[in-house]
Image 1 (cartoon, rainbow, N blue to C red):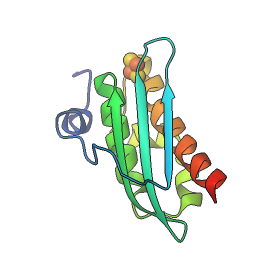
Image 2: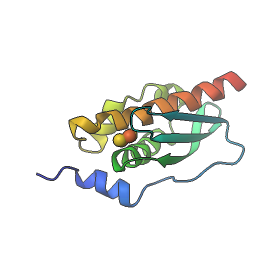
Image 3: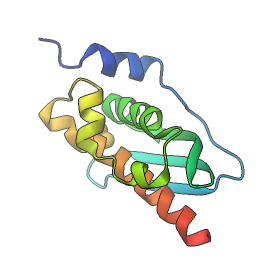
Image 4: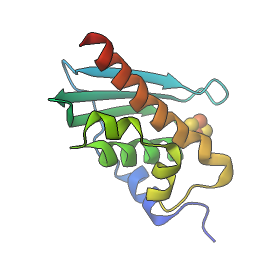
Length: 123
Ligand code: FES
């Protein structure tokens, strides 16, 4: 069996929502001290709805696929719903990640939470 699902490969080779948002309403940056990978998430929020989201990830294939999928999962959603997005849900949406790569999806959950905290602290 292939190590990565077709969805992981697709989101790695064609990541959605890569980039930055100027004047974002919330920005979150998190890292994994062990592998040194970094993920930055930018949110545009209107009336508590995430109208746009972009990311920059300096990391492994799983981290890039996780960020890409996570942005798709929260775009157009209320902030409260995005806050509840778990790394498990991101991995499931990617049709799974190898067990030793699950921590990469945690970065996506944490980056979103960190960006939302930033947004809430500015309100
Ligand atoms: Fe670092 Fe995947 S190995 S996030």
